[in-house]
Each structure stands twice: as structure tokens, then as C-alpha cells.
Image (cartoon, rainbow, N blue to C red; front, side):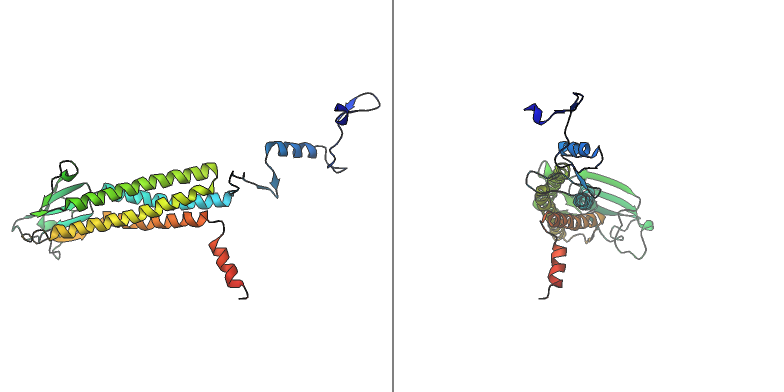
Length: 284
């Protein structure tokens, strides 16, 4: 059996015959490089390294990986904006007219999902053209406290008006559940990049799109709670305006939905853009 693989020359030395597929006159190291490439499972063609094929038959090229990372960066921007908006208490500002108390100071209140702050401002620091007290960014004495309807179930009272604790709790729970979906989507994207499996892009897109809608829904529920708060008592006239935390939440919802749609497009087995161009260039 070994005679098929080894031969002896005229002097009795053992030699290894060349492979049947080797072309005469080729470089001596060519067969060695080919054998090493086959043993390592890697091959190159035209200088481009080919990615390994997954168990499902789908391969991820370097261009696809770059697109996934770019879409993931878009989704991360939405996550950061959501965390910034949920963690701050500048969702809405409530302020009576600055001359309501007939004093040198006036009160303004701003709150978010978790706590509210009452701030005492000097009337002389307020813009003369502004009728209400504020804005809350002006320097003054501030007193902040967390809402008790998360612990003891008590409603908060601001300017003789009572908050709607059910709506406030619902808005907070929607925001938290959206953050949970963002974490799940980030885990799916990390597994897709590390294992080079395109399948994980589909659940990631669902998680990010759903989290974006939940963030926007949380914003709508919170705004409805503010309107019910203002209508609960008309003793103190109040001016209300949504603050910069709401802007962060609105932008975060839009960015998360865009990121989820990008992941969904990358998970498709074909390019919608190229298919549209092909359909447009067809004779029909």
C-alpha cells in the first residue's frame, strides 16, 4: 500500500511523487501552499478573504458586517437618547403667572416619570415679555422629591392639582419595557456579529421597532396625564410646556424605528434597492 505513495530512485533514496493535479514547471512551493490552504479551510481569490459559511448556509461578508455595525450605531444613538430622557425630570414645566403671588419671587414646577421639582425664581430674573414664571433653567432654590405612587400609591399634588397616578405609572412601565427590548436587540446584534449569523437580525429589528413605538406611546400617555392634571382643579391658572426631555424621547423613538427598519432590510436575502432598479430598467 505504501508503494503507491513512496518511490525510490536509482540510489535507493525515497522520494514523494508530485500530485496528479500539479502542472509541470510550477513553483516548488505551490503545492505546499495549496495543501496548507485546504487544511486550514481558507482560500483567497483575487486578494479578497472569504468569510466562513454559517451552518444555515448564509455567509456574511465584510461589507455586510460594516452595514450592520453602522445600523447598530444608529440604534445605539436611540438607546442613549431614551436613557437620557427617561432619567431626567424635564418632561413638562408648570408655571403660574409671575404676578400671581404679588411677590418678588414666583414658583415653577418641572417633573418627569420618577420625580418632580419645585423651584423658586426671582421675578427680576424672568424675561419682562414672559407672562408666566420660568423657565426652570433660571437660577433659584429647588426642592426635588420622588413620586410616592410607585411605593405607597399616594398621588402627588402640585399647585392644588392632583396627578393621575395610573397614567404616570403606565408611562413609566412602558419606558422600562422599551429599555428591556433595547437590551434584547443589542444582544441579538452582538451575537449576529460575533457568530456571523444573519438570522439574529430579524429578532433584533423587531425589538428595536417595538421599543421605538413603546417610547412614543409612553410619551403620549404622559402627555394625557398632564392634560388631566391641568383639568383637575382651576383654582390656580397654570401655563404648561413640554421641555427638552420630551424632545429626547421623541427623537429616540424615531431613531429606534429607523434602526429597526435598517436591520430588517439587511436581513432580507436580496437588496430591495437593486431589485427596484432592475424592475425599473426592465422593458415592461
